[in-house]
Image 1 (cartoon, one colour):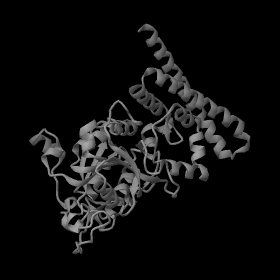
Image 2 (cartoon, rainbow, N blue to C red):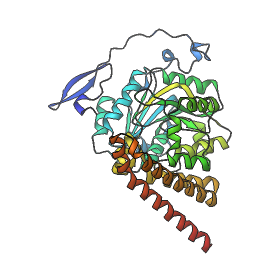
Image 3 (cartoon, rainbow, N blue to C red):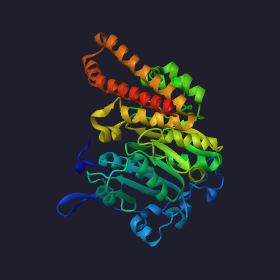
Length: 404
């Protein structure tokens, strides 16, 4: 991780002194742009929603703070301003350097007219100050106390002005040109309600980006670790990619673009989901309303998976995931969409999968590297505790069903 003094410096910025400390200030040298020819799907440049020559630079205009706007009018922010084509919402908590890297990638995309919203979920690392200094046109909304990812994301969705709202984790970086591809995809397909990016790890390895709606087998495979093992096999990956193509039932919320009408139809994220499954829940609801959900291969995004979760959950994290919150949120989704009986079977599948994982690791320990063995030893109590909690949840569910 880079220190604050070596934080990401986007093109167009120069170093300067702020009150005796090193900071950054913007140095604009605008150059005339030649109007582009309309891209594929937008034959007339004047009608192209991605045509930069026809759109004002909203990200270079000073914008009043959200608090001032709400004091003058308590209604929905989006109703009070003309919609732009694209809003980008970045919830963040104590991930200053990652957030700056994310915003730098948006700057490098050279996409005009972005409505940029950063929701600081009670950070203590100076994220708001850094973003406000480096990106003065970004609308920074600071929550004094952490409310959790889902609440922060909903605050961003309510604040955004775009017809399309791209929700980005703060530990992501967007490829150059990806935002234009995203806008064109929504413009070409009026039935596209939610689109996910083609995620990859920093080293270039493809990352899980979307799938079919979870089944009981999915709960077992995820809990046992076999899903991750299979994903590393090239033949299985190609089979999955060919089977799913770009049509999926849900996409990762790490980089999820949502049409505003979808939010009007099915509402924002369900805030009962603390950290996981809010993306799954929203996608399932959108598909039930007839909207299409897809992965856009041309929208590439690097995802430092687990970086934000690690900062929020600390020692509870294993395999880049918070087992406590993941189990709770997945079972909450199962009860909401399939009922208590199905959720109980899903819990049993998770318990069985975690037990299988622990047994498999014990058998494989003599044959793996020492570093991996130590990692497994550290994670074992976390999985055992997760199994105990799921068993406790099953006991409470059983007692409730007997008393009703």
